[in-house]
Length: 327
Image (cartoon, rainbow, N blue to C red):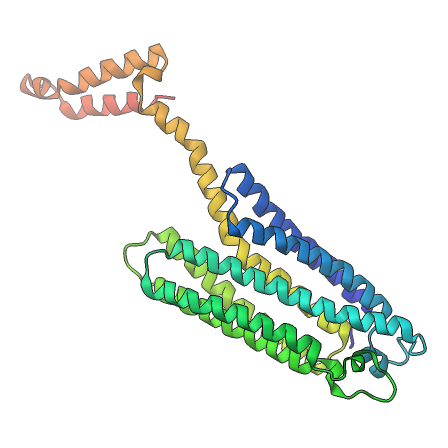
């Protein structure tokens, strides 16, 4: 069963809304913590703009149709309305660039996250540098493939005579998916050995392990996307749907660890005033302070009480009971 343009539109709305919610939560948490405006903040802002732009472009090219779908689904698209098909075909190229930019921006956010988390480990730093070079070069390659697969350029919206398979953009799709999988494998190569590193807290191991699982899930989604699009002869609604699914998955993977870390730090800072207050007796209420002081004096007399034959165990229990009653 082939996906319709309307179904693809609804899927785009849902995935774009979820992705924007994730990005806006990250921005809000970051500003509440008053973190400095670093590179990751501007990448999140840019990701938000790209997702909104893609949502608008998707609406129009799914409405107008493309040359690829006009050839394969003459009963669905009005092949006589050549002007709209031309616009839809051009917008579909823009949408492919935008989804590539969205996914690659999430890769950049993950690389920045790993750079901060694994700072000081030489081999990780070298692998991250390789990832940066690979990310930049593959992005340029995918964008070039998007616009150069059909030559001359007007073949992208040509319906008669048949322009061939170039309008189905199999080369662009294969290059994008293989590049994405390759970078994901490199990111997994960074996180895998760290799972077994000593000297790190269990929370750090959990965070890295979660990233490893989510990265594996990203690879699975990319493979399913590739198979599904080939199975429908590169129908544009199917391409749009699976691009949206990959967008929300990559957005979640790239931002969820940072959001969790920021919320954890905020919760810990909220508890710091209570801890500082407990460590400064002069800030305690007078009745509590006098009770604690008498309890401490009571505790310090343990040796003397032991010498007179009194029960040190019962006195110690009384002292701890008084300490636990401190608000």
